[in-house]
Image 1: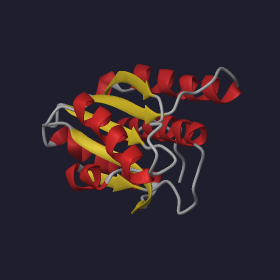
Image 2: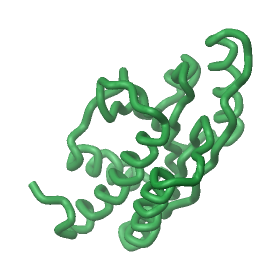
Image 3: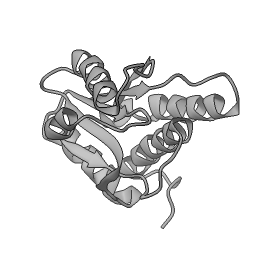
Amino acid sequence: MKISIHAVGRMKAGPEKELAARYLDRFAKSGPGIGLEFFGLTEIAESRAASAAERGREEADRLLAFVDDKAALILLDERGRNFSSPQFAEKLGALRDEGRRQAVFAIGGPDGHDERLRERAALVWSLSALTWPHQMVRIMLAEQLYRATTILSGHPYHRV
């Protein structure tokens, strides 16, 4: 299954970008052996529309143009479901095992995700009830994708 990340906002050079890249590189190297291929990261600029609703619609339009109709769309949102790392790995493995060819993880802008995306999503996932800057969310997502591959492959990186 091809895994891609779609993020609203651009990450500037610095330690956060380097850390996210380090975990995405680990994920890219560890995933293929268990059927998970990192397919890349797409960044889009935040909408400059006047209202939050308009910004959400514009950002959703950009994401929907990027996502194949058959892809599993996974929204990162503070109002989503919480999972432990093993539960997330199990969910990712289940998507792969049910024959999904692609999963797209979407990190929204400051106004969150448009309702159309919530309706389309296979999963709305919360890393925490807290609101995080998109740079931190990218790091945590990248690390959890890597951790999921280690859990699914039986590697000792994840310890209970």
